[in-house]
Image (cartoon, rainbow, N blue to C red; front, side, top):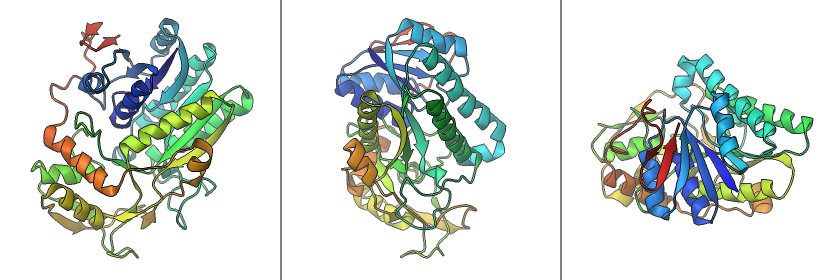
Length: 357
């Protein structure tokens, strides 16, 4: 039996695929490659020595999603697929709502039809809005400040309603804080399209010379150096958290939310300093206006994940920076030979995995 990983070619998805394969799981990947690159799948196979099937389809195509379940013995789903850029979501909100929410509804309908009712959902700490205090526990009030965050919040509510309607479901809602880092091999990492939306890939691209300087949004927050504080978590620690959540949903029923973070906060300038020490590169930056809706401080209370999933983030901020730099140095232009869901991408044997339409 296999674990279906939607969005498995993406940043967090690819690292989770590595951990699943290394743990002995069979996987099937579903991805439309709009925000990811099939080359990451080659790298997954190179790291693990494992073959796996990948379907180049969109979750909105219900007939093809159903075909995946018809052709494979799926026992559980880890659901990463979705659009994720906060700024872009403000410009094209209807597209985000349709893609993220409708895609999840289609997935759940097909899962129900095939009696697959174990799901790990990729949510986000954005569902907490601007927290009134830190650390943030799972019991905090929920809100969202942008269409992207609202899609995560709405999907969580949809999944809660799904469980109420059928108590055979087992669902884990994983609320990520700020994933950074890369696999220690430097073979897979974060490869954003265009100008990065997140801090670490922006820093690494400045360090490697792709970007001129980092824009730091505000230096008048009530923090030690005036810049915003966030909870940064190594992507491999995050990936391992999905395996612990998979164990949970595989052996119980119900629905629950878990923070995946370190419980520690670092300011933007502390991150710049830590990266400079790891890379021995100077990161030029400039202070610009604060962004509307940005919290001054945001970091997790990860105790529930420790108690109920047996999961604790282990990697240090130094490792996060070192691995981010190794990825950027080995892949200055990200994944090479980018392929974006071409029509002729049909039953292509890429050596270690198969892409199917």
